[in-house]
Length: 248
Length: 300
Image 1 (cartoon, chains in turn yellow, red):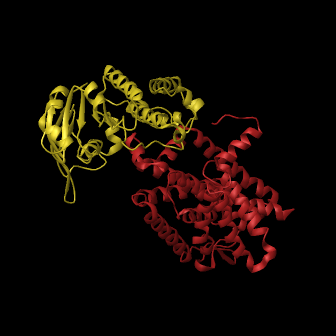
Image 2: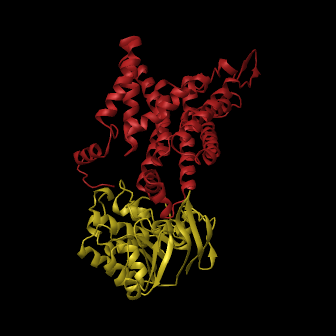
């Protein structure tokens, strides 16, 4: 579904991502891990198009994404969340989901009607469902900025889902969460797979990555140093070395 | 009484000017071009009633359209730049329009006299209202019909998905793109709507003053246009109206007895107002209090 071919992104002399090959198959959950600064978020930004790769190609369902602007990639079904939460703080929870309904299916809907008119049964139903999914139904009229941290993370995921993604890139969704919240997040991710969403999960929290992914790729200094099933990755000496430093 | 009607006319036209900047500010863009669109609408509508003998209402329509078309054309290149660069780019456009009208002659003979815009002398004798025997009160009501329509439209936008999208772009462009919002389309559309409102306001302005010239559309006017919504607060269209009343009635008229010292106090009071109410005269908590007053405790 998604294929990076020798994708590189250099910032001056820094090789944030260097000749990365990565494949994500339909309805797979792939983990992308690595120490801080190893190029995980840069990879997400390359796929969503915030900046172009210095070299290499990114294919989505066989189509080269070069030159496709960010908002069009959404139309193709690529959505993301941000490592540092980027909600629209002065909009309500409901509005945050409303503005994200930009998929081709939603495009035809009337944008100029107020919530109680333009919110046709379909829109209301979908937003209601997303609110249920994120456990935020009781907070729908709250400003996003006033939510607790965990709630904001959940709203970010729900907002990405409102775009009807086929491929979802989650950039450290568990950062700052406690064990209970991580457990809930894990269930939500598995539920998403049930809906047929393919997921690229960038994460530091190992209990989450090991628990939900089918396959893991490990980055270090922008290069892929290992790839394989979770169990194999845990046992890989190169990975241990990258994380713990020194001899494994 | 005519004094108060005249005051209300000024407040009405300046509210339109402020609202034209309001919708652009919602997307986080600071545009100093609003005086330019205001000028284009003023000259276009004035020339149609004076030189072509049109009725005022279609002339205002064309004035608004002219403002919208130029705003759309300016929007595409200008909105590629951000922040201070955009301020400079739109300032340059506004000044360009002003210089254009400074040099713009288009006079035709009507009997013994010639009428029409005459460069630095300006465009005199835009006499649609006196020729048709409108009283000051009637002119005021006429202006306010448009002000109320525009305020209702913007109020409506604020409650629609489109309004939420504007605010989303204003808040975080990267996040807005990342949920599929087309930034260019949103920014250019808000600029176009702002241009239409400014053009309409300019057309009304030309007819109630009966005389316009290039200096009626200088940088000060452009500054006022963005100052109104900022002083008033961006949470509601009524904030802009409140700011116009604060500035035009309280500061400009109310402080007239101070003579030349007025301008000094004027600046100081705006600074004071912004310090006491950093989110505008009518910010979200103030709105909530007003809503409670009317027993409507639910947000829109």
